[in-house]
Image 1 (cartoon, rainbow, N blue to C red):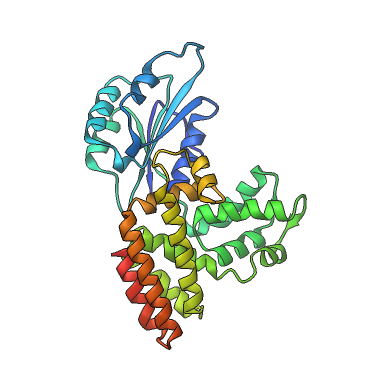
Image 2: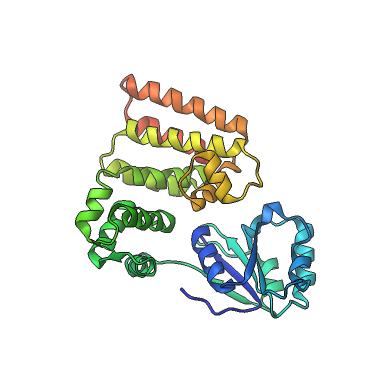
Length: 310
């Protein structure tokens, strides 16, 4: 997944985590400024084009490009008419499943830059995990990588976090399927994480598919509901914090473990007002009462998921 550096790069795909990792590979060890498109101030491109007082190489990464204000698109078009060849500009555009970058964006980038689709197929997950572990001096075997995918699921951020957990739990050890099972025993909750990502990401078809997979796996509806409630609490914490906090600070103040988790939860929280999140809390309370009063999960849960995702 290593990409050749260029002055202007547009990276697009479904997974923000992978887009950002690819962007960091492109900029290398340059002094990089990273900005969320929704927090665009208007001086980012000017700073990129202005020579540094200390002559240090610089770069700019813009994430969540679909949130870029209209006036910022005008600034971007003007900059791309004559981009600084020594200062990489990397634009990250997250798209929906089977989606494409906006045509207007492609029109201004393609003549001067490199457009790259960043994706990780299911069949690529295991070698990607082994390679990622090796880069972090973690001895992860191929069967262990397969066990991780089977246990955690196919989401790259969660898998990357799992490798970090394994490294901390088994320092200096060769990690096989046994160690994976010991560390992640009983993690049916990973499926619930995927369900929450889809539901709070407003992906109704994906959320329903995820819910069906959970039901087929025989997980208890009350346990799944508890996972949804936990995610909602995290989103409420994130929504109550200033929107412009850097991911690392946001993670600390919201009590989250990883920066990528803070970025993802912030994106999900933006789909709802605080009042809407409070309303969803009320729905979860009612669903809990219904399940404990004898209602079945196959009746209660689809209604709840549809209400959240729709």
